[in-house]
Each structure stands twice: as structure tokens, then as C-alpha cells.
Length: 345
Image 1 (cartoon, rainbow, N blue to C red):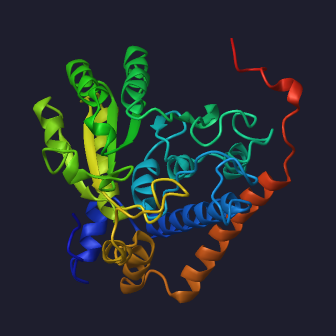
Image 2: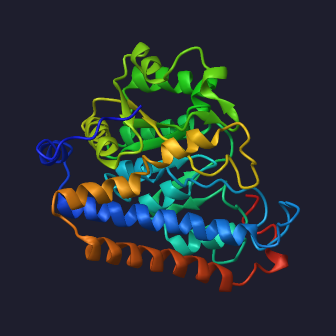
Image 3: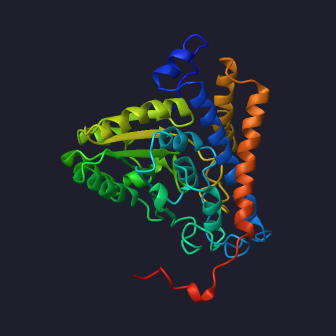
């Protein structure tokens, strides 16, 4: 699902209606570029020592690795509307959400490397991230983000705080019972909760059509008297417009909203996934909808940026991402005597 490209005449009004302006779009472009370079840099380090025979335990970054290359517009479109006091609960594919929420990229990278400077002193890895100062966390358990974010939303409501909790998930997770259970509770109690489903068409390697009896999840929210949006997840403007409405509604005490963003991951489900379940033609189709050059083209059409401005934004974003990964590489490993420190209460 994607929107037809608006005409030059309609584009300015559509952007304004989405609550955006030139500076906001330039910043969104920079953020998406930074996330893309960060993910690509992590990918390159991850594969070191893992060829020719893939060994998940080899190299400087061990274990599984889930990259969000292609899904940057969803994270940026939502998280730029949040404050540090708002909570984001993410999934196993979490780097783009963390960076868009403002989590320190160096400490994020260091956690993946298992370094003592990481968010959890190298003990959590990419699927167990926690940044208290940004109220960001994730879980490797599929479907766990819904009740966890609902708990945060309940605490905000109980303490009469105007904060919002956001649960990110994939479309596969929305087939879990936690989705329906959370929808029912959030609707009943009118919790300040926003659920964002990143519908990238595949739950691991299982195509959506093979596991779902319906095309989309957003009608399930409506069954629970929760408003829902179906948006183009490859378009940061479309995502932002829906997210602004949902987040403002939650802040004002009007309850939860579901946003289903149809998007695409350009890498495999995890690094090492051969991807034989997708055709080259399918990947090339979605690459033509890449959210980064798509936004760049609109900025140029509006006269809001030229090649020099876009190049400088990409350069600054790349420098930030590379600096973060370099910091992680140079950081020390934890002292073995700390193995159990902070793990058990």
C-alpha cells in the first residue's frame, strides 16, 4: 500500500496538513540518513569473521542481528513527535526506533558489540536494550511490546501525566494473543497508548498471505472501538500525519490508536537469512520506493533543498553514525568478574 505521488501543486498543502515544514523535513531526512548509515556500518562489522561459512558466534558482534534498512520512515515519522518522558517499547528489530527516539548511538552500538560502554554494559545485546534517560526499551519476545507499553500507559494515566506510550511491532506479532488482549484493555480503560504495526509483509520468512485470513490488522482495532490508520510506511510524511493525530489524541485523554504502516525491509529477517522466499523483482519494486531518496526528491521539487544541502546532510549523518560505531569498536569489554552484576536483583 502506498500513496500516489502528489503533484507539485498539492505537495505543499499536504505537507502543511501533516504538521510539517521545511526544517522538520530536512531534519527527518538527516535522521533517516543517519539510521541507514548506522545500520549499514553495523552490518559490515557484523559480517567480519563470519565468511565464507556463516557462524553466528564469530566476529566482533555475536548472536543474531536484525536490521531495519528500508523502514526508517516509520521510526522517524513517529518518534520525532515524542518527548523524553514518553515511552517507546520496541521489538527485536529496534535500532531505528532507538535512534529516532534519541538514544545515544555510540552506547547503542557498544551494546551490540558487548562492550562495557553499552546501554546495558554489554550484557543485553541488540534484543535487550534499555535507555532509562530516553524511556526506551525492547524485547526479543514477539508480541511483548503491546502489554509492556500498555503498562506504561496505565502508569501515566494513574499519575495524571500527559505522556504517551508507543508499542512498535511487526505484522506477525499482531497475530499473537497479546495484541487483542491489549486492544481490549486499552480501549476499556482509554489508555494513552499508540500501537504502530510495521507491516513489512513477512513474519520472519512467512509471507503475510500464508498466515493471515485478512489483508490488514487495522480493522481489528476498530472492532475494539479504537481508531486506526493504514499508512504508507515508506513515506515519512504520511506516517507523521497519522502519528501526530494519534499521539495528540492520547495526550489529551481520548485513548488508544493503532497505526498500520506498510513498509519493507531490504535486508533479510536477520543477517545470514538467505532470503529465498522473496523474488529479486519484488525487492527491486520496493527499492524504488526507498523513503530516503523519495523525501529528497520532494525537497528538491519544493526548492527547499538542492544537491549541496542534501549532500551536507548526508555527510553529517554518516559522520555521526560512523563515529558511534568507531566508539563501540574502541570501547573495552566488560571485566569477567562483573558477569552477574546487575543481572539478578
